[in-house]
Length: 142
Image 1 (cartoon, rainbow, N blue to C red):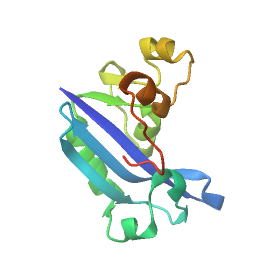
Image 2: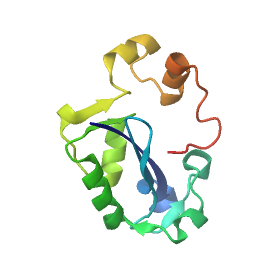
Image 3: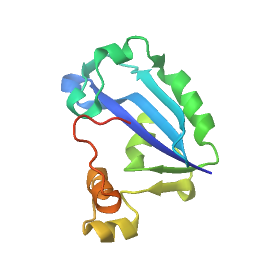
């Protein structure tokens, strides 16, 4: 049982220097959307990072609270193999842990690092190399 996760963050604190969860998306092995939810950060947003995150104030006005969303995420990923890119950032934003043996991180998977000829390939680079897809042309979209 595999699920893939991606989170988008906004900035909180002075000059938006601290990342806070603003959106979480989870799909199953077949690409079916299990969750795509905006999240109201627990602190006031000081930088939306729209150019990267795609998040705007309107997205967070009626967003669910952090605890409600993380409860859903926890249920969806429990005992599942979790796939993502630099997944430690997503788990940190969710304030969650996941068993290391159930994590598949495309940013650290050695065959992909070899293919990309770098020890830190971007998801954009991997998508182009492996799938011949152009992604992240504008702001990210989980």
